[in-house]
Amino acid sequence: MYDNKVESSEKNIDSVRKWVFDAEIANRFTDEAEKHIPDYWRVIELTINILKDNVAQDGYIIDVGCASGNTLLYLYKQGFKNLFGIDYSQEMLKVAGKNLSEVDKDFPSRLFQSKTFIQNMNFDAVLCNWTLHFIQARQEYLKAIFDSLVSNGLFILTEKTLQSQITENQYILFKQKKGLSNEEIERKKQQLEGVLNPLSVTQNLELLTKTGFSQIEIINARLGFVTFLCIKS
Ligand SMILES: C[S@@+](CC[C@H](N)C(=O)[O-])C[C@H]1O[C@@H](n2cnc3c(N)ncnc32)[C@H](O)[C@@H]1O
Image (cartoon, rainbow, N blue to C red; front, side, top):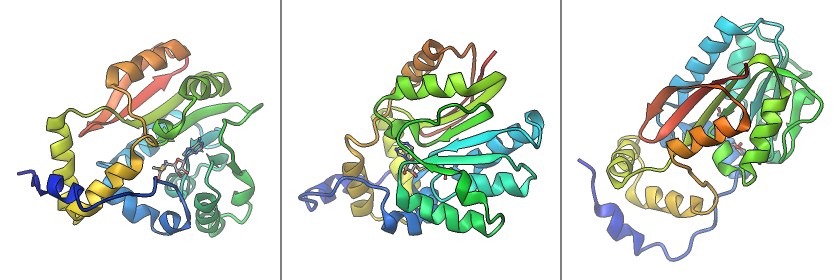
């Protein structure tokens, strides 16, 4: 059962620094992701399987919020070569560049540091797993992604969505089972307030429809973390 001692530990945290993807996080990113993101590797595997089935190996793929490069590395190992990454954190890109240059020394030149989406490039697939919820101008960003996709191009989006108290309690239990203390759980929650801004599932669907995607499906969902497959027809 969910252990509600989390509430009492709240009192012990006076003020917390807001969440940033700095060097400290970048250097232990995979561990952080595995402990805080339900189905982290399952969603990456699902993403890779969908791309393997539907995108040619010379297809153009970009990972938005590529972080330490886990998905790009996996894609590279599956034979995809026209891979690009974008992230606004220099520290995350430094780690991604290091990891990816081990398989392709030119990879860092295909990693872009930017807060806005890339201009003047077309993609067969755009990935945006656990990143859009950090972006303020979501509609503009989505529009730029949509415009960059070729006809029948794929967009895979994973977002943390609004959780009811029932779901949040189960999410806390998930983190406790990963070995996180109640103080760590509460601290991260406070750090993310106003930084990670979740929408409801319905709001996400409305936003994707408004952007122009006509085919939208939910392909994974766990404890409020939802993956959408969108096709540009
Ligand atoms: C939870 S991580 C994404 C994980 C990654 N997609 C993976 O599969 O491992 C979120 C990433 O989004 C990046 N980010 C936040 N705001 C951004 C923005 N406006 N543009 C691009 N990247 C952004 C962060 O630096 C961070 O690397």
